[in-house]
Amino acid sequence: MRKNANSHSGRIFSDRKWIIPFFASLLVSVSLFLTAIIGTLSSSSGGEQLPFDIISFARSEESSGYFVESDLERSLNSNVVQKMEAPRLAYLISGTKGDSHRMMRTLEAVYHPRNQYILHLDLEAPPRERLELASSVKADPTFREVENVRVMSQSNLVTYKGPTMIACTLQAIAILLKESAKWDWFINLSASDYPLVTQDDLLYIFSNLTRDLNFIEHTRLSGWKLNQRARSIIVDPALYLSKKSDIAWTTQRRTLPTSFKLFTGSAWVMLTRSFVEYCIWGWDNFPRTILMYYTNFVSSPEGYFHTVICNTQEFRHTAIGHDLHYIAWDNPPKQHPISLTMKDFEKMVKSNAPFARKFARNDPVLDKIDKELLGRTHRFAPGAWCIGNSDAGADPCSVRGNDSVFRPGPGAERLQKLISLLLSEDSRSKQCL
Ligand SMILES: *[C@@H]1O[C@H](CO)[C@@H](O)[C@H](O)[C@H]1NC(C)=O
Ligand SMILES: *[C@@H]1O[C@H](CO)[C@@H](O)[C@H](O)[C@H]1NC(C)=O
Ligand SMILES: *[C@@H]1O[C@H](CO)[C@@H](O)[C@H](O)[C@H]1NC(C)=O
Image (cartoon, rainbow, N blue to C red):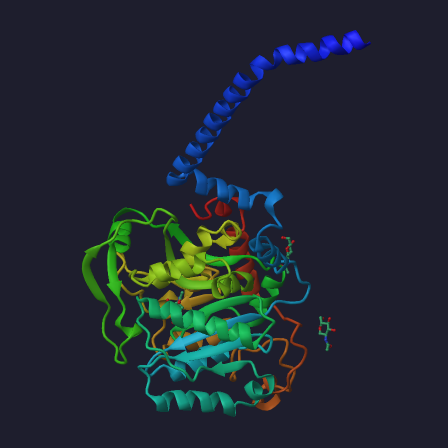
């Protein structure tokens, strides 16, 4: 035992000679190893590798809960949960000097007590016209009771091809979000737009849709348009001047963006509440970054929402490539679309679109639309909510019934055809390409 212990300790004693070189070489290899790792890390942080790793980490399932964004994304998805209640729409109707009567006509043609409406007359309209519009809204007994029509008292100076147009649309959306908790889609109309179906048709068909579809006509910006639009830098003087003047073109050119792809399309849109909340709240900085980028971009209303939606993973599959309007262009297209008249009536109906533009003030075709498509004989295009007596030419909409009952007509059938086409496999395979 003792001998054994002795020999053991003796061996340890005699073996100690290699311990010092062993630890020395261990120290050297460990420090070499550490230097190698630190070197790799610092070199890759200068390149593209590391940011990508961080992004994929932030997006991976395991990491959810570490970052505040994962909570926000969850709240985003919960908004989309299918509601059983019939939908509600929020309309912005905008116009300029001399448009107040047309705006009232369009408003009455798209009016339904379930919906929300906001009217904006830009700064070119004289204050008297705005006041007149506000007082005719105020004087209407239906609008007064239902309280769903608002006139913006603040009038913005708006350049139609500049960022001030987007700013105005975003302001209207912000007001609609603040004032009413209960709408599902935002729709953008101008005074020269007119509906081709009743609100009963529209609400009836949309009752059947999931509330996460954004109707936004879009294509990838490419070719000469890409170079002409994305390289030039404009300044919209309406951002800082009180009188309207045209957008200014600078001689500088900028390079094409590499951190997102540019999309373009129609400035007329029908967007879901969850998507516009994403744009307005800005908890994800992307919509704000794109807004700032578009400040110097010509025709920004034809690109802002398109670029945001197609570059956002959570929303790109919700973009349906149609603006729900019938719009006719010259061949080759000029800057403005053709004014629609009687001879376009058949084509408008055949398009199955719920809206059309643009119409000249009080064009006779509007009376034909009122009579044959909307059944509008009094102020409003009637629906199942109008339960008053219509004897002796009385207005049935002067008595309001249940606003979640709809009476769809031929317009609903037309719209259903269009929607089925848009939701087909073939159309959806072209999303954000
Ligand atoms: C909204 O509607 C107006 C029509 O008044 C249009 O000119 C504008 O570009 C539209 N779109 C956006 C994104 O603001
Ligand atoms: C709702 O959608 C279903 C399935 O697409 C269809 O069969 C039904 O007819 C639709 N209803 C209405 C009211 O459009
Ligand atoms: C209105 O109509 C809907 C659908 O038919 C029904 O569920 C609801 O109870 C009605 N509301 C009232 C107040 O009658």
